[in-house]
Image (cartoon, rainbow, N blue to C red):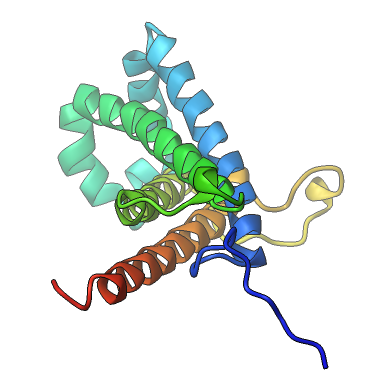
Length: 195
């Protein structure tokens, strides 16, 4: 008879999908850390952001145009700083949470559960929503539409990177929110259900 033995190295919230998700999450985190840092060190970023917004098709017509004209254009410096620091901050959160998921794959005290884990998972879920939303907004501002078959895409990607990031980031957000719920439920069961 074959029996499965539970190992102490895998947390209740852990499985292959979570580990694979952590790899995607680490890649997204690294992407947004580097993008945010590139914007932070660019002394002319606010002026370039202003030019980008004012010359983008989606800022003049489309779903987001009224919001961009009413909120972003009059507050361009605030919007530029919000964009760069959101990218950088969310990238750090995604990378730290991915490393935390990886840490939990180890046995012994190094891989043991800590009380801060649900907060990290929830913050990572929020960061996933932030970078996914930011990527979608950028894609729409650029005037992006649905991907299509085109001879012009024969040697390039028919899906813009901003659009590709959206489902990946939202999937990470969903996965991390599930991890948050599992860790919270486990903590409540361990403490006897006390709130």
